[in-house]
Image (tube, rainbow, N blue to C red; front, side, top):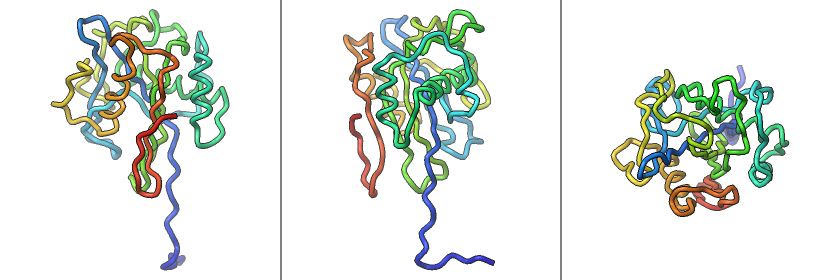
Length: 221
């Protein structure tokens, strides 16, 4: 039987690629964001409110799309990656975010359910790497889009096995929810990036959240 030597260090779990979407609704007087509560059955962050999202699947590379990523968004995704990321890999992350949105909320990114999503509508706003020592680790890219741009009806959200209690939340009033700290930080920063309170430029800064040598960093790309 193999035994671990006292001076052997456990291997650090490599973060898995993931994507999340910050879907914003500006059809009301105050802009709202879509969040839902993760099931208690989840090992990673159970019973907390988050944006729709999840890990990238191998099949995401093959998903159809009608419009490519904005050149600025594509360049930032490639530049921010810890490991070499191709244009196809960057698209797969965006497609993963849209796929997770559909699976977790029932919302289709496009006027018709069969319509291939237009990736050019997505802004790349943040990247968060789960610190070492957690039960799961993800390298998550956060995309943002307005519901009206994507032809999404905000009233058609449907709870799923993964996200419960789906709701449109005032982006300036979310203190009452049990929200994951990283979700709270990302939302705070994206709110600051919004121009005039109701638009978001593709050239907006990209926030990065990671831990290095035990020190948490909340910086910019």
